[in-house]
Image (cartoon, one colour):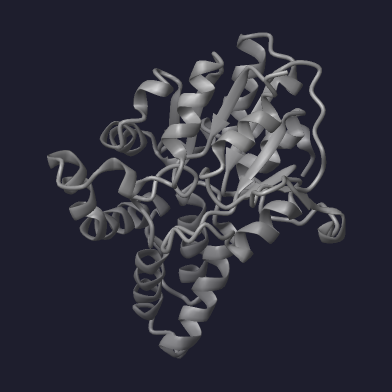
Length: 302
């Protein structure tokens, strides 16, 4: 598939490592865990910032894979396959992780294909997606309610340092955009619950049922086209390969957020780190605790 075909059709490509291992050449900003994979040199300060949502800013949906995989295993067992639960779990885990970063519907399309391969009568991928979302909501409803009622402070459900970074960019008049593979109405609602919606205003985008009508690449194209933005003025932040790849293809700078979602340890998730480096991330950070160092590097005061 050519890049032009991808652009026109809004199809999110599967993960493919396109960058050789660069570990020996990386360095860290002094006194910080900010890893510089390749140095960036701007002719002027970036004016636009694109953020992914889940895993990059929000932790509300942490643990989603522990919901999706059992749902899919259950569906595949209903086909009457002779495979054991363990075999199905291993199969599902493999393709779910491979497709992580794309819109949820792509994982459901793969589930439909696996059902058909086993002689079952598959449902529409949107039906599988709705069932998964129903189960996920059961898991995260207490988190959402905690935020809604004030029992849970937003900071407990945000990647550490998120608000401080957003405030820093706001002070620098950076125009911020949010683009997520999660359904848009959920993204808007959860950004509101976390108290970060105001940083983005109307610039919040997410998946829709007609998945071919939305992609993060499309959001980036709109930023560049509508505002006549020079690509070097764009910085993207994300923990998924899709947004990192899209930002790099557009000519921007990509910050890979290898967040440890479950422990919030301040250490990079090894799997995320390798995956993000593989598609061209310029920087790798575990979270935004060192937001001042990160901002000074990308938006130097001098």
